[in-house]
View 1 (cartoon, rainbow, N blue to C red):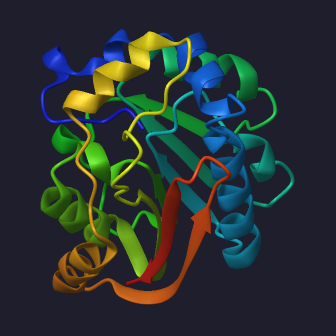
View 2 (view 1 turned 30 degrees about the horizontal axis):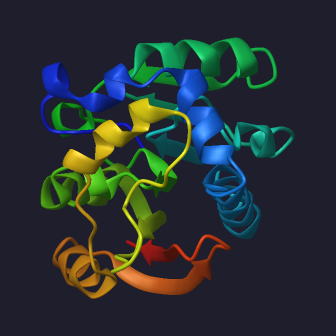
Length: 214
């Protein structure tokens, strides 16, 4: 998901939305479909009244927010084209939707703003400690942080091979995080593990879903 330290050098700004969606949904990748289901599951389980989706890209999963009695929905992404596509697709269906084009390393929400914050494949591209500290402030008491981490793999490249070569730019900046390291950092910021599970795709890549409660 497109968030990184230096906006001017951020490769996510060089990845067209069409490339992103076609790469992520390719049969040998299938991550768009996986992320869609994870998001739907967490929304259905926790029924938040306010939610922030960090690294929202083109709005994958936003359709699951329809008719949920959610009072506030905020999508954040660094790529203005992704934000524009999300707006075009969902502003009518989700009148409460707010979209923010920004770098999360530089952005702030008010304290205690959200019941649920969803960050799927985001922490691989940000300053982890900085964002965890922010999220801890942004969550309401007992709020949930939903995280998806890509797990290291000794035999597979971090970015899968597809015809959409712009995605290869991510190989130079993606930093995978071991779940145990992430847990320890989260605890420092008053985020306690509530649930976790692992997903292994047909490609052999695996992902760790971690739900943390403030």
